[in-house]
Length: 420
Image (cartoon, rainbow, N blue to C red):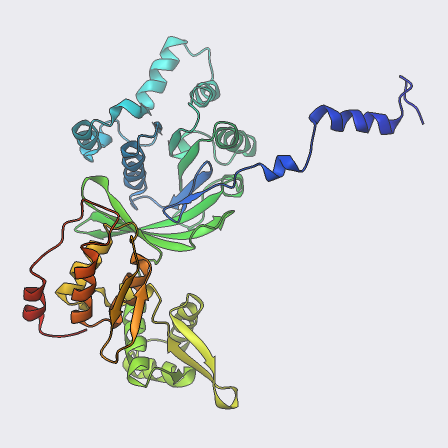
């Protein structure tokens, strides 16, 4: 069959493919998006969900300072907060003190009002957004605070248009986008149309942990992930907007108490115990807790790797403690000796070892640590003398030349006088 130009339908298809010059190499050559800090999809759209009062803006400020310190170009667009908030929160002081303003472009509601005044209302709000995004330089970090102040989140067309603009930034300009979106207090679900979450690359629920009404840390729990980001993690806020990330979420007091007891109970029972016996022991210890609550806490953390499930005689299920689990750090952090705390603080400053760390235990067995994380995961089983040996070996075995070591380790051990 021929068309009006005398060409067959097959030739039209061939012309189409030759026009776009498609080949599978076009897929092979695409770079996979990288993940930083376990939760950030670089060159992707990252959405943070939380109700008011969880410190979402403070989290964005923390990420902003981190990227500025790395020399990245950052665009922060804040249409949600009072214009004096950056100064009140200390953001301005840190930027001034460290000379970080060169790579920062900061826009707030006042900039929009000036733009409207200049054009006497002849241009629409959407044109202001398009102009901002059009001028974003390649590879920039874009912060959007918050989505509901940019669009009507209940309007499907506006939501889709806005998310497509963000996708344009990530795909064509290789920008990394962070956006805040609010949760409705009544339903605890994100406000507005589902496209905001559907079109994002990572979506996290945010919960802050405060002391005297000041945020000390955030728990992040994944709501959606296209890439291999962590399902949960904790961001601990340090001085001057510095932070550290761990791949476990902060636990509520009840869960923390149950898991501490369960781990200790298993260890006292020669390292393994029937699931039913463990649940009964937990119930005897925490009589106010329901059986289902206990069941799901233990099952949840077995799934997360704190416990190893074994099949015993007559197919009975047993739990063992996974001594490599990072959750042990969270459970027993406050019970560490001073020398172990010193080792943990030191390891935080070390990126990698120049050579493996070897230590010999009392039985003569040799344990080899290839990474700082391996020591952190195992520290709960080490004796203080073994910790001191590791610290001594670290003095000549780090890639960071600026690490300072405490030479008075003997005093720490003598004062402590006990092993964990």
